[in-house]
Length: 279
Image (tube, rainbow, N blue to C red):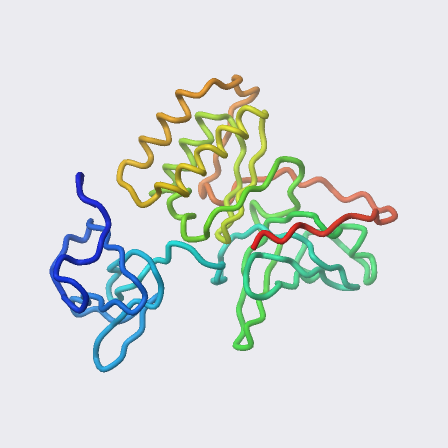
């Protein structure tokens, strides 16, 4: 978005097809006709009578050969290879059911973990309420979501806290080539794991956690405005904080940080409450 502009509908009104810069961010309403510029309808759009319309409230993006609308809010819709954070909602003999913030729960089979687990011993490794980082492995035609915990940066989350933002804001949380999340972790000294489903794990000093939460609130509230990275950096640097005890090392993909994954200690399962419904 050019400096001094603000998101809005095309000046030509509904049904118009004015030209606009690829850098301009245009906010559209559901049912509003989109300027396609010869592109095909993509995510967040539909075609009828030869014209393309927005199906959600969001920003128009041209990603040849498609024009799409990125929603401002909404439930998480899984995509293959997404890294997400889930809560264990139920435990069965060979798998766990994960609440990932999607319309359906995702089963995590015991073979999709780095552990050697005997049938019937799943509750000795993960219990109701535990948080895990997993990857969406596949989606079948029936809507079943296959996930795995095998891979770099995946595993059970220990300590820290989890906050939730709109899944539509996650690209802004990560930033171009990881610039936003890198700024946040370097300035605060916190360790952060970002899930594409809008859940973000934060670990560090209490001061660092508060700082990261403030940054996420700014991204959630003003993520559509230009100069976001600079504004977040200014916010974090102006806030008092304790010096980090160790340097944070970022992996190649900031949305998939390496996590400390302790080996589970078999024992009698404890009674725990399921996670509160965040939706």
